[in-house]
Amino acid sequence: MRLTLFILSFFILSCGTVRVAYDYDSSSDFSEYNTYAFSKEQIENLEISDIDKKRILSSVESYLNSKGYSFSKNPDLIVSIDTKSKENVYINRYNDYNYYGWYYPYYGYGSGTYKPFTKVVGLLYIDIVDSKTGKLIWQGNGSGSLSSNKLSRDQLISNFVSQVMESYPPSLN
Image 1: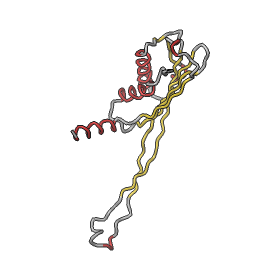
Image 2: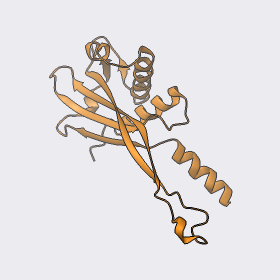
Image 3: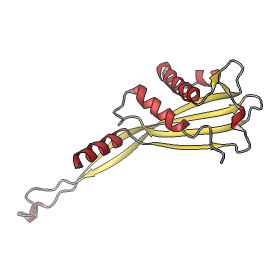
Image 4: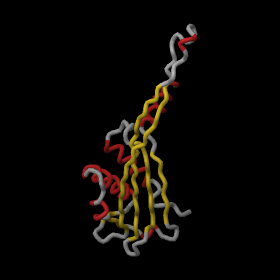
């Protein structure tokens, strides 16, 4: 049982954490929207590989289709996407304890070693705009580590998008 819990917790932690936030216009009636399209201009200006663009668009499209929306050339909603990445630098301190410090006190315990490491954090922004009014009605964003994830790039992006889109459409109860 303990081994199962350990393996499960290791798997969950190795998948990384996506921090998600969203906001929406509470005056919008989300039940009126049925179709969507992507903002072509916005997507062309993304500074990521074409393969990653395709992965993100495919994941957003799958999510919206699963919620009953359909792609259209004359859409109710315009979906725009933006991405950024930043490199965070961290410093770990490791103690260099002298093995003989307890027996030969004049050797001391050592000074410690500092080792810097970096972690790349990816940021994904998804905006949904009412195509008739041009008003932003929903915005979601997520940030998470891209370097420590053990999933394939397809799975990573799909999970990332799913977690950001999870709160769309908002329940207005």
